[in-house]
Amino acid sequence: MEEKIKGLEKIYSSFAKETQVYRDQGACQKGCGFCCTDAGRIDTTTLEGLQIKKVIKTLPRARQTSLAKALSKNIRKREKKENHACPFLLKNMVCMIYQVRPFACRRIYSNHICTRENPPQVSRQVMDMAAQSIRELQQLDDTGYSGHISFILHMLGTPAFLETYLAGDFKPEAIMRFGKSHGIIINKMMI
Ligand code: SF4
Image (cartoon, rainbow, N blue to C red; front, side):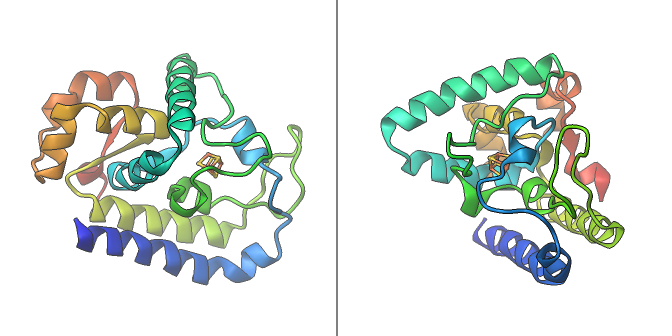
């Protein structure tokens, strides 16, 4: 697993370096949070989810409790396909898990200041580089899955699933029911 985590960090840092010049020209600023306040699907791999879970465990107990409630609410909203503020967004518009935020959040930026009428605009070149990084992330996590952040965290919070995944076993039939109804992708099928 250690090797996989290093691989994850390498993909993040390569993408950040390759796209720096584009993002430097973007309009994004700390405290904006536009992409996080009315967020739709925030795709996360199971490997990324493990990293997020580690950080959640270091949060104060009261924050962990309120986060668990916010994640459950987010699950209900996404099950109805409704957009909802990301459960990790703090009141001051800062990400609670910024250091381990998933690639879905790292790849987004905008060439202009966003409004509902004028959503984020990303360069074509960055979109192509992001598509390549997503393939690499799925390849790296080839016994895992991808899907909306709260669904993936829910799966990782299920002891039987976590045990199977950490053992490197691949049993997609075990998540078939949940996977189909929640749009979970089998990484191996995307490679
Ligand atoms: S994980 Fe962080 S960066 Fe990503 S949508 Fe949530 S608050 Fe925003």
